Image (cartoon, rainbow, N blue to C red; front, side, top):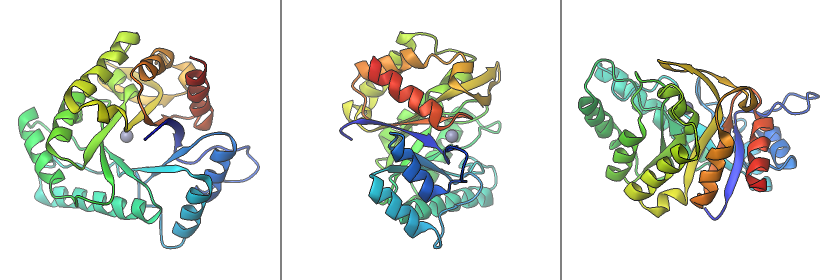
Length: 272
Ligand SMILES: [Zn+2]
């Protein structure tokens, strides 16, 4: 991508006068200066044959970047083969829904260790990812917020090296929470970007998908999303590192403030 754009996860709150759906939400986002939306397929794929045309038209009309967040019930490291199959199937259905509206990036969490060694979990997850179709969308492997979840930055970078259709979704807040508040200052963010650039090349920073939000955590990791200004997440230093590394792509704001936090990120970035 040639720029860095900002958007939100799910539907915007709007001005309270009408309930927004994906299509009207896209119009609204554009009207307030945002350029991306991550559709939430976490419970079900809510792009259907009924709403897909309106969403696609709104996307084209507003030149909005669409991604989607896949099901929370994906575990490519499940012990039972049947559950692995169901997980692959959920990814395929999400891929189909996102493709219908011209979306590019399908974000998902890969699964849980469930007592398996990191190496065994890695192999099983890799083998399942290799079964996914190689065309259509980018599979965006998301860094996870708890130690029980597969998805350290190192694991995901390694998978991206092995599988061409896989790219990163760096959820900075998850990394922060996973390690009980590790990302404190500028260097903590810069080190992440430097590592990605060293391992995956400059091109990975030129098309990067990111999540930023306030987060509450303890020694077990992520607990819940918070408004950015009510959390200790150092978004200013994070954005400075993103600027200094000339990162391009998409930043999705997550959390209860939805578009307000996305605008806070965009305006802060613009003032740096
Ligand atoms: Zn996620």
